[in-house]
Length: 98
Image (cartoon, rainbow, N blue to C red; front, side):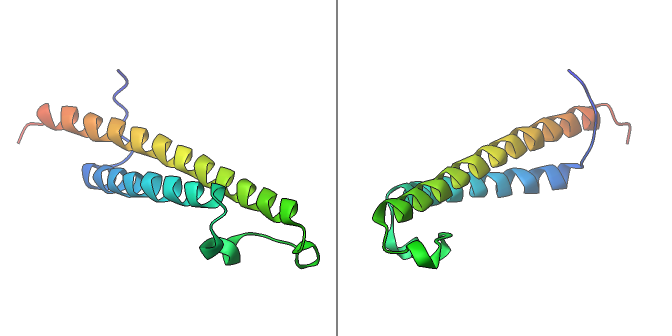
């Protein structure tokens, strides 16, 4: 195992908590976009001239939902990076002389 310390123990814990929150939030938002939730209408990038085209509006909802799922995947990667750094910091602290 590579023991490269890039961030400290407090930062790694903070990043883990933030990434768990981000994964949950973006999975829920992606699901809501895939269900074409009218509450999220203002957040969808819809061209004003094509607003009457139902298929276009639904495709933009689906595209936004896919983007949310991609961001959730990035947060998963941040979680595993933070977990790795947390464990590196724990093993390095065991070898530190106080």
